[in-house]
Amino acid sequence: MDLSDKFARGQTMFFRFFADVFFAKRYGHRAVVLETVAGVPGMVAGMWIHLKSLRQMKTGYGPIIRELLAEAENERMHLMFFIEIAKPNWLERALILSAQAIFWNYYFLFYVFFPKTAHKMVHYFEEEAVSSYTNYLELIEGGQIEDVPAPQLAIEYYNLPSEAKLSDMIKCVRADEQHHADVNLRLAGGRTSEHTNVSTDAGQVAGDPNTTGAQA
Image 1 (tube, rainbow, N blue to C red):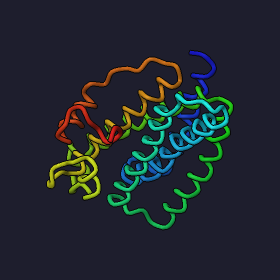
Image 2 (cartoon, rainbow, N blue to C red):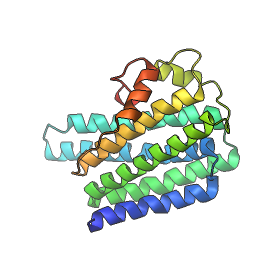
Image 3 (cartoon, rainbow, N blue to C red):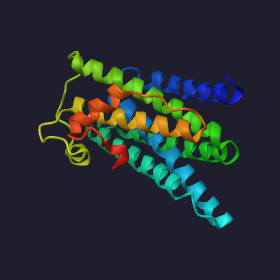
């Protein structure tokens, strides 16, 4: 493990510590804050590469820019879903705004100077998100959290059946996060891993085994 990898992992554990302290097993509220932060990297990276293309007056950056901006939009939609589920209070909304402001500036400076390490950090962020959503899903399937109806916004976004539940939505969100993890690992220069079960489960729920919200 090189220094870049150690730093990326360390930052991930640092942010996870705060998530665990503030939200513990309150996965709906945890998702609201984490998705607010998760929507930052794709937008920052996409914007910076867009400006780089303009400065250099070169083409060829389009696919990467579109992928990153799609990631940011996908994470924004995740936030909208979980706001309907968790219904954050004023204190949690203030925390969301603070987290976004701090993380935007931090990640922007980090990305300008260390883009590959920044992508590697996001890869680990997304892997943690996959783990978190898996735990969330297990609690729902175990009856510890009520499997309420999925928000209408999520049903339309993922083309889910009208009777879809929260667990169905989480499977789709989890598949999105795994897709983001693989994309950022590739952009960091690493090799993507295969998580067939995660992707297939979400695809089957949405009615198309080859399409997830991250690719919409």
